[in-house]
Figure (cartoon, rainbow, N blue to C red):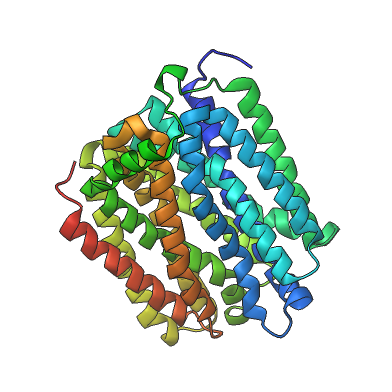
Length: 398
């Protein structure tokens, strides 16, 4: 363990790996959905999608606790404790005999994963704020994007060597290596003099203060809408590639291409956010994605074969790139006025946004009917709502 601050490059890489716990836990499962459906829910194959959303739901609930605990006990301790719970739940997933047991274990795994995901944002806010935080978040998102690029390939490779259960062993290994890195290299970012006692009355008062900021409320709703579109896409994208475009075997390679290409969103944001401001970038991104979704919805029924598939790839890249142009900015906007309660703020904001996004994503994912239409309609509605809200309530550009 060291007290010497990390270089910005190593700090960005470490924060990206903490974020990547979520991406790996979701994306490595995507190639396994057909096998999970065949093994555990052959009569209801769409139910296998709940392996994704159950994890996200647990993560959303867990974020309510991770931040306040980190305000009291420090960032590193809480991240490590959450990662321990994550690893234990991965063992339960590996041993799960039924879909119901697997889903319960995935919820618990999500509870544990909430710590590295949420508390890492508080760590960043401990050291940065405003546009500089948004810029750093863009760099984190660029590095983070490498994990979704390789996660489905990793999942497919593990399935080829063993079976889908073994993916959960990879989760344990990844979490262990990341915790070793965090423990040995990253100093605690929350000094003991700034820690807050874990008492109900102060927590309620801090939450009331948090929710009194209009920018926090608006940013949280926008994050829920944006994440809802993302999680709905993640739930449906593998079945679309398999049933619509007949590319089940090559899906991990195409998903890697989409993930790498979508890094352009984070890179672009890092270049323009200091000039245009967070609000203007968010509004412009929503407008562009809504236009792309409506155009895809109109053109997809008219195209066949490779042209239809190319349009699917283009739309998917745009959807994932949207995250790089909005996620960091919305988090920075929400966290800017509440740096003194960063842990609790990160928890409440992430919890509300994540649970809200799951409630929005599940109906869209379960509406899959063998065509991309339900997904395209659902995403267009979510992003259209986000665009209207961002124009009416996000405030002046800065």
